[in-house]
Length: 91
Image (cartoon, rainbow, N blue to C red; front, side):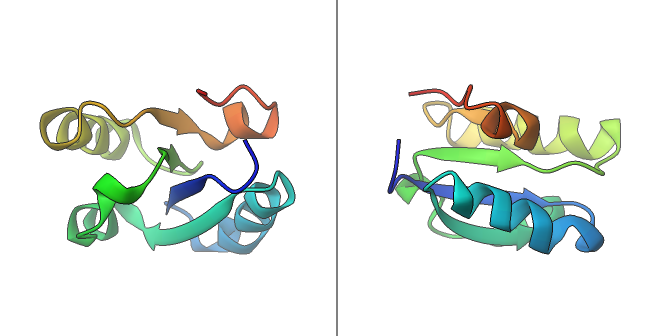
């Protein structure tokens, strides 16, 4: 698990630092983008082991992100910050 490169999609700027620190404390290498627009603008998604969707997103934002990821990168797992905090991230 340690050293895995993850893409963290932050939806609430107030949570960016604490959630990013949480991910780092779990031993992950983290790249952070803001919101679904940041996710879509990222050109290196295929390089990540997993995409982590942060808290604070509306249902519409999460649905848009999930649909886009499923369409463009179906092999990359998508998890929530809560799953990562509980060490339940896909291996």
